[in-house]
Picture 1: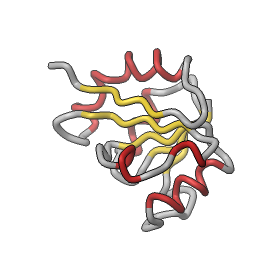
Picture 2: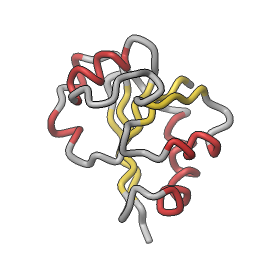
Picture 3: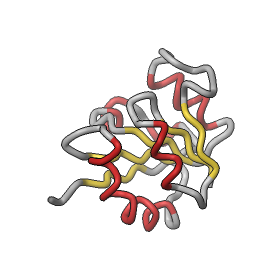
Length: 108
């Protein structure tokens, strides 16, 4: 799956997603682009947008975009805090549909 990591997600997370084509917002040259426009840009090349921004699902109308939104809900956006969520992330990616949103919470 083609994934785009938001600026707030550590780029090193991609090393832990070897079965996917992963790019970052910074790599794409989209740093500083606001969420609505960013999701529209992401939809042109990616199947899912991965963020730690818990407010994004409430700020965007996903029904207008052909991309899925994945929110990693952890106590921190540091790599070590996000790694325990990767098993559930992988499971969710297999069933993701465009125009959907999934929140993966740290249950610890």
